[in-house]
Image (cartoon, rainbow, N blue to C red; front, side, top):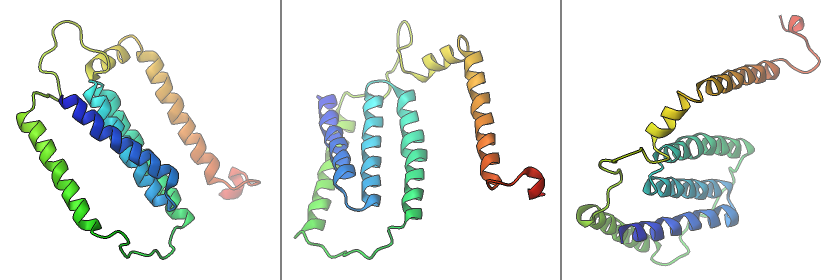
Length: 176
């Protein structure tokens, strides 16, 4: 039952965020909708015991990529004046009421529910998607490809910085 409630709440949040990405007229609001969708997906991964992919989802996508999106949006410039008057009657009261209902529902699930975010003890093999399972495979069987990939990414980043540093048509000797 708890999983169904979580699925319905977060599914609604993910769909609402996705729709705001599509239909928002302000790009900052669209980015915030994307953030809500990414966090909802991260919680879905946690519920399905994919803790590593949930951490990657939140850190890489919701953290780094969305920050990059917001920097680009701010560089493009969305500094137009907006109308901040409330057009929906009782909007604040409605949001406060919905937040209170959500808070009570979450408290009831945490206090009275049989739901555990992390499995207590796993007998037998470690489930797929856990940090232990993926790290064990990555640092034993796939250590060399992992290190080669890290080296290539480092070389690529250094090359991109070097290309961006010098203007086209100039050489290293001209810059000195």
